Length: 364
Image (cartoon, rainbow, N blue to C red; front, side):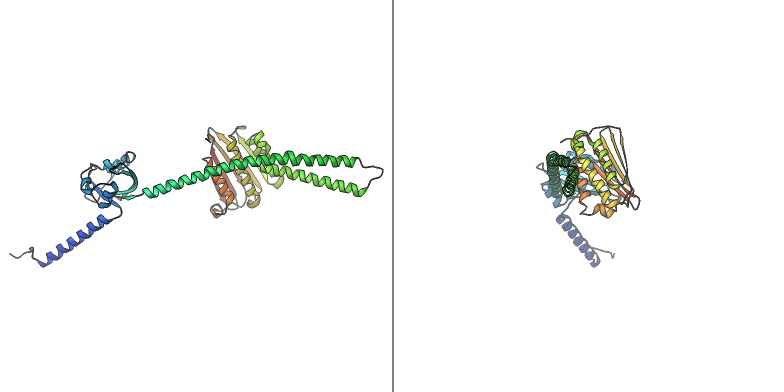
């Protein structure tokens, strides 16, 4: 009987190819820089590559036939169990975070990807060690938070310094100029009306006008630095006054509404909101080309909301994302410090809307 036997040339070639492919597969499987392992429905480890065994700090032969849950951190158990219960053969692979623990109990973080081949009861998983990336991310988050804390500390110091300078300008220089203005007025009244020296009178009038302008400039500078009304009467009164002054200075029609009619906020929040409001109104003056602005303030439960809307040219997306938009960046950072959010949207030739939301229960 003629047939294909062990010495059949064709079979020898085929077997040789199969052995070669198996050797290549095994080599690739064991030398991979990601962990590969196979489970049954009960979560027993049937197969694992060398990298996965090294991750867990255990010899591979001691790893087989153990429950994978022995090496899964408590918080990741439900995620793996859920995947084992719901995975379907032939379905696309599923990715999920999986925290593993080595034989000595140390934790490391992985990104797992699992699937069940078609017509199979084996669960095949691949894990990528993300520990270094996660630790780097945590360090970056920690550094970012420290920078924000430092920024908040510097900001608080700057506000105190602005308050001190504003008071000194108003009480010191402002008072001196007011006194000078009074002296000039007295001097003018003492001129002999029967023998008026026109040149001297003109000088006195000119000096009085300069003093008047200086007093007004000082008032404006002190107000921009730190308006007294913010500390004395609170945020609502300050924004109402600022809106009225803005209308007088720019000629832009303004609408200002508050609901409920009166409420108080933490001084830290009040200061941050006032500075954000200043930046918004300055941007409207410089860039919006608006003829009308509406401001709405609202406090409900533990949330403060401010909405400012203008009818100008509308801010563009590229302006919002530009790395040199320091005013916008400054507003965003102030809001992050208060765990709030700010949304700026623009519609071409229809205007820009800024919506600010800040939780009013703060810890400092």
